[in-house]
Length: 288
Image 1 (cartoon, one colour):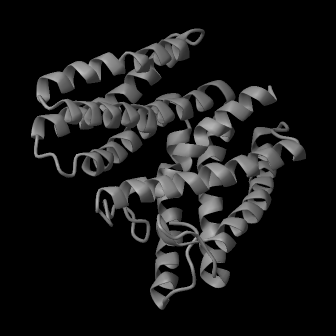
Image 2 (image 1 turned 30 degrees about the vertical axis):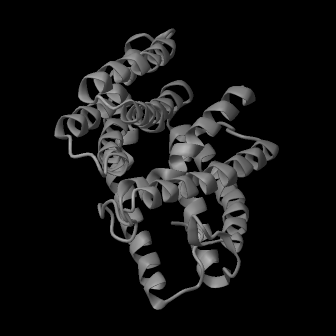
């Protein structure tokens, strides 16, 4: 998605479509940062769309409609319920949410025991479903917790920083990319694009944070903290990208959706963010 080599003119049009859809989408959802309930609604919606695509990926060879349906519904419900717990019980809501997610292992196991008889199929589907629980709703819950505990600038930073990294890596990869980063996983991602994402991500983070500090009217991060955030962003976003490529290749699905022109599916848009939010949450905890 982000570290592409210079290839064809199609890449240029794709980049323009990315910018246009990102700007329109950003303006469309920016108002949802204004209140905790609207932000939770955004997290639930993101989980629902991403969950639908994720279920398509992991159950591509499974015709069982019931299994597809219950897992597609479960993922956004978990995000919603966890967010409500955090709102209603500020002191212990996140702990309650963690327990809720831990309970999904026995819940998923019981459901899969009823849906399948083959031992290997049961094991495979339990692993896929439990991973999906932590990959999507749990990470979205962490994102909501960042909003709830630290404020909207930090939540906005989680979204904007991955967008900055992806955009810079994509642009540098098109112009200067020559050396594949991991050709067996994603042939078009390059070392040059990844480095461009790191450097551009640092300066983009620095600028975005300084702008946010004006609106927030208080300092957010020191320069050394921005450096750590940039390194964490670089590692998380790069491997988040590669992981989603692995998911698509293992499922033999090149395109999982086209919800945003130039971006492909919703998971294509948030794959970096899904790996970065836990990193950001940990760094925020250590910075306090």
